[in-house]
Image (cartoon, rainbow, N blue to C red; front, side):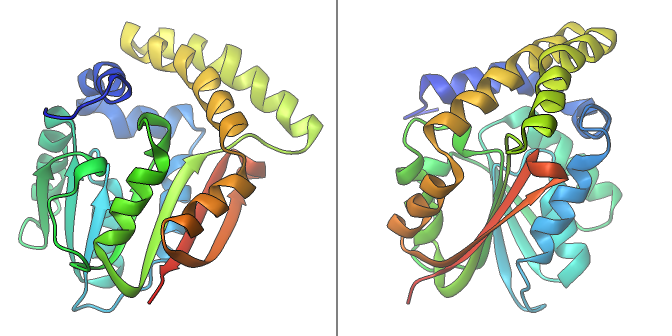
Length: 240
């Protein structure tokens, strides 16, 4: 894809082959937390039934489906992975919601939409995989109308020393071991996640992420750590 960066390519190589079973094992390896985090993210969007919501890095369409099922609106999902989009189409078809969810191939850094096209936007596990988080945030904010909501879900590192030690033990040892039982691909994901999350959290601690959102033109930025800080939901309004 034109403009694709090495971070984009690395994420695609790692996750694209896992698309058919991604949701099942993401739920298992997160100890059931991933679906709960996604539901909380969607609960903060709060759009009317006539809205159109953009879901960036839609993956297998889990958030897109949750948005439609909760609010009855329309969703446009966009992702760089053809494999993830194919799985999303299958899920959406099974749910009978193909008329309400449109899926497109594309990158967060170059969204093919006019300014203010959407009522709201969501994204999950995105900023760790882009070279310039501020540029990606500005693109997401650009396509949301003034006053509209932007919400995100990302992994976090617990702040409590005791909880952080347990988190480290699970993500450094437990995840790779469980992944090995599933497949070589999931073993690689298990090995990748701890250093990836740690690196992002050091470069972009939560207070710096809040400032990043403000620099992108978002106001009233809210954060909510979940599961002792293992997941973080953020949401804000597009400035008028």
